[in-house]
Amino acid sequence: MSILVRAAEREDVPALVRLRLANAERHVQLDPVIYRVPDIETVRGHFEETLSAESKVLSAESKVVILVAEAAGEVVGMVEVVLLTDPPDHQILIPRRAAEIHTVVLDGQRGQGVGAALVMAAEQAAAERGVSILYAGIFAPNKEAVRFYSSAGFGPRGILLSKEQGAPSAS
Image 1 (cartoon, rainbow, N blue to C red):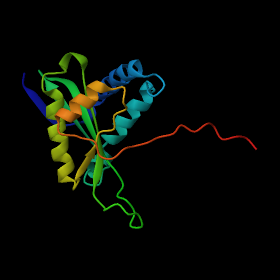
Image 2: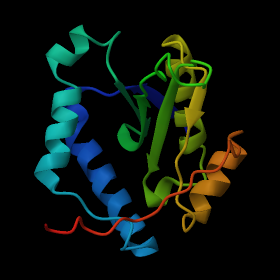
Image 3: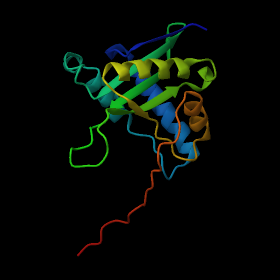
C-alpha cells in the first residue's frame, strides 16, 4: 500500500474530525474514567482554527503541526505535533525544545505502516522547528499505543505521577 504523508489542509477538516472522534470512542472503551468523546463542533472548531489562513501565515510560529496520511486517496491517519513551552530560566531543567505527539490511524488501516510513516514525518517536522524531545503521553491502559510508540524508538523518560484532587470545598 502506498502511503502519502502531507500537511493537513482546511479541506481535511471532516476527515480530521472523523479520526478524532473514532479515536475518542476507542479510548473511552479503554477507560471511561480517563477518556471522553468531545463535542463534534468543538473538535471541528479546533481543526478549522488550526488550519485557517491566518494560522498558515504564522506557521513558523504555530504551536500545532498537523499531518495526514493518505492511502488510495483517502485520509486514513493523522498526527499532531504540539510544541511545548520551554522551561523558564529559573527552573533546573536544561532548556530543550519539546513537543507532544498524538497519532491516530483508522482501525482498518493499522499494521500497514501508516502510523510509522506519520511518526517519521512528525519527527522531521519537529526537527525543522528545533524540537529535540518528543513526548508520547500514554495512559497505562493503552497497551497498543505503548507497543506502537516503543517500536518507533520512544522509551520511558522519568516517571509522571498524578493525583486526582477532589473539588475545592466551599467556604
